[in-house]
Length: 332
Ligand SMILES: [Zn+2]
Ligand SMILES: [Zn+2]
Image 1 (tube, protein in one colour):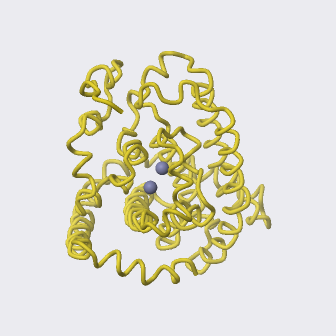
Image 2 (cartoon, helix red, strand yellow):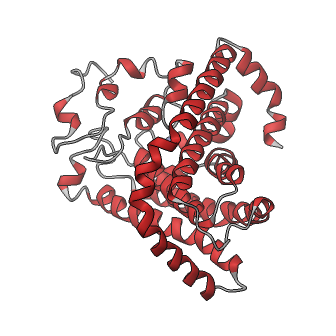
Image 3 (cartoon, helix red, strand yellow):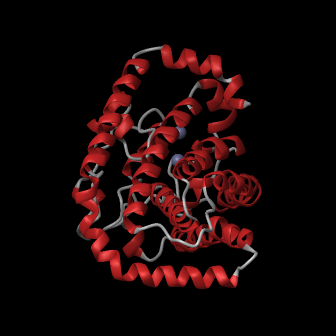
């Protein structure tokens, strides 16, 4: 309904500037990318499948054991798979990050802070309020959507079917999920930056100009539905996924969004500079992967910054804020 009432505004927004032209270019490039992916898929995954081969039987046996334990209660198994497992991982990871955020210790983690001087220490009252919203989104807004997802998934095939997907198929699913998430998140997120939606909805998420891990789910309920949940849920619907794939994907998506908000550029983890910069500057870096930002030119300012130079996988232990320091500050 919200999407419909925003239809006019959205059309106007997209027709302005060069957005429409670059959307067509984007569709073309993504389409070609997908064709290439399909063309090379067999050879690319053949080795992985062989590697997976033996352990595949092991996981199949584990899954069958689980199925017989939950015989006739597949619905419970589904709920555990789509809520409890991903949420447990989310809070375990965020628990560790929160310990660092609130104490500034241990130093060997906090020294990787991206926005030096921010959240040192984090505002306790603001954090408490934010966690309340996160819990509300996670335990009140998400569950009905996930309950509704079950019958939709069943239209294509039982997510709790006996046969696990092959490793090859799972990799293909991950690629498709990621692509769908990128497209849906990018455009819904850009729409949320339209002045009308921004004021009413998205401003909340941007209260944190220096985000921390849990802020990944700190959002207005409408944003949580449109931008957080749907982009992640559509992939499994399109692919008719098995519960095992869905659980892995939801967990992965939560861990990745936590990393992109965590505020520390840690070694050997994906770089959070991109989305951190979005929180700092608001009008750059709307996507997850950055592919659509590149195609739409919404990362041109970012590309001229030190943050962009630091937007790499850190393969050593020297914090990037030290090896690639900001230019000396003027006045702020
Ligand atoms: Zn964010
Ligand atoms: Zn935003």
